[in-house]
Image (cartoon, helix red, strand yellow):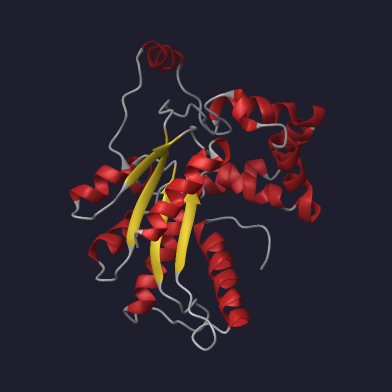
Length: 270
């Protein structure tokens, strides 16, 4: 309903409102039967987890349902998920606040100008290095669409981007995962993974500087994959199916056909 969206709760409020509006338009419960599935990629995974947490709390009468969607939430499909450690860690709220304040000033204006200059050359280069399995997977429309989105709504979306870069969606999901594990609601959580498992080297370099010795060591030592979100679910007795498709950090874009087939398989299994 409003911009900018600065944290997981803001994004979840917006998505919940959209779902509720759709239900009202379709007369859910009267003329139409609807079941919900939420699909989230990468850094947006905490939003899906928060939607699930709220749904379970509403179902168990722990939260008001006046502005929440009414139809049952059947499953979450999480794509290119963050490592479990990044979701479980506590969020340094003060650090996020300072980083966002820095990005909302001169530093952010310069970064935004640089990112959008030269027809988005920085966006293209960043995406090739950090997101896509192969540069050609991006296609010709990737960067133009990014530029179009960046300029939409008078450029207000840049503050959501700054909040994301500041780490507003990182960490703080331990309670959401606990609710998933403990709830009696019939909700599935499944995962679609890009087949290229290279660790994502992207860092929010605005506020973190790694010592040179550590950087050299990390370059020389092959990365070790941490405990996956799928493993975490399985260790806690949750049935979680994982399907591997093409791509890396954005398989829905890189391998749209494979992703669509995997998504339909997971939805039909519910």
